[in-house]
Image 1 (spheres, rainbow, N blue to C red):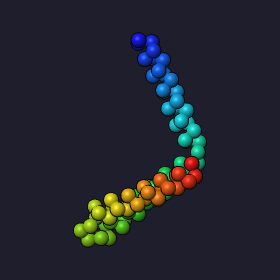
Image 2 (cartoon, rainbow, N blue to C red):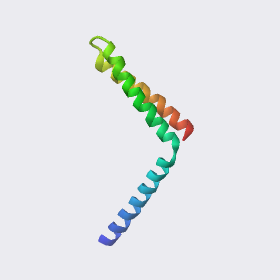
Image 3 (cartoon, one colour):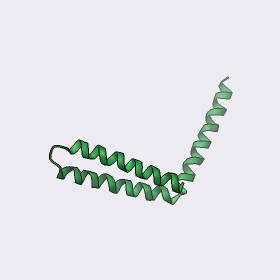
Image 4 (tube, helix red, strand yellow):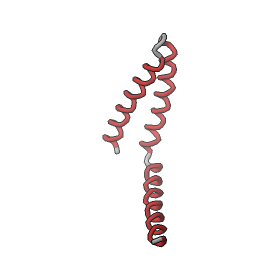
Amino acid sequence: MGLIFIFLTKFMFNIAYNTFKELTRNKILYLILFFGIILIVFSLALASLSLGQTEKIIVDFGLASLEVFGFISVIFI
């Protein structure tokens, strides 16, 4: 029983490692990450301009950016 568990754990680790390697080779991942960071900074700057609605602006902007980047990811990946 223990030998089977070790084998399956090693097998799952190898699959996860190879998937991570393939994702890091894909340049579109870095592009999406870069624009995500820019959108986070922009949402914080935009939220500081609003009066009393800081949390709402950040949440709305974050949800909108998740939807947009999810759509872009589906198209290109």
